[in-house]
Image 1 (cartoon, rainbow, N blue to C red):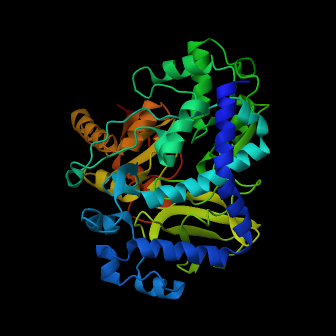
Image 2 (cartoon, rainbow, N blue to C red; image 1 turned 180 degrees about the horizontal axis):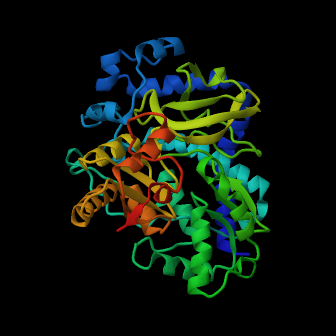
Length: 472
């Protein structure tokens, strides 16, 4: 047992207890808890430029809120983000980047209020994790650290604080303190990232928990250990490893069998649904309930019907609409979820997919962004995915012209830092280019889509074989 880690984990469990208790106690009153969240986020936004424009009032009913405030996307509120007190009057502690916008990168304002909402959800999950797996408390944990990306903020954020220095910053000062005691520290610099990670992990004999995002990270960890150490023996390196936490739904569903092969004796716990903007679900008592105490939620079905959290139906699929203390009111998240049941009155969900975003490993490429990038080629072109990397498919042309377009599209993709992160982690290979042998080959894609106009992104398939042609 690592005494310092054991002490730190138990302290973390102790400080998480109040939120765990409140989360459990409120399961029977979803309607009341959500109206409290709505009042909180309205109160923090009512004096902002956006709030004054829409006449926001803390005491609004849900129906008044839904009638007066439009559902928005990031691109639609960007003009307000650029204004002082445009969306919120609370001080922005840091602007955190994430992918998925038309411009390739979104900048989300993190305030004390938003941080508290995150801390509320994470605390309930962490206490429940320690309750279910008490042996995890006796050693250290490894939380996936993405190599530090060079993300340049836009001109309108000149002089602002951008990007958290460490993952513990999401939870504030307490998170930074606990991070040093209970987490395995690995240098986040891109240089020799995997070498440093493998070297650090294989010598951490008290490892009890591995937490990452995509299961492909764990698949890569196995191959890197085999490459750098010459073997993969997790049962010898980490004899007390008890839990692996990662995505298990949506695009990650096919990797469940892979995880069972990589960690045959370890419990795999699926991640809740969390983004830079908001926490939607958390693992709790074997389910994935809505983070109903953190933000206000609405859900839109495939036919445009909109309901608050207390109106969802079991088995139906919805897109998540979020309102947070970070100033995002009725924000279209793009996340699609399916109701799997209820914990008390609170709905539980599984992640289905993301609408309007291509996201296999966390690259978060907006379809609108990709449409703009592919459209800038000036010829019929499309983006596919094969054998671990994206592929630019181009109409017949000279090799020199194809290489120009290849460089142009590659530069645009790598301007998105979440895409660059996936490259740095080797979850994605670099963009490849394929030139079709004939213009007529596009007809195969049109038939697959059922329409004449091609989208920027091809559906799943081995399109290099379907089309015919050659890779550059």
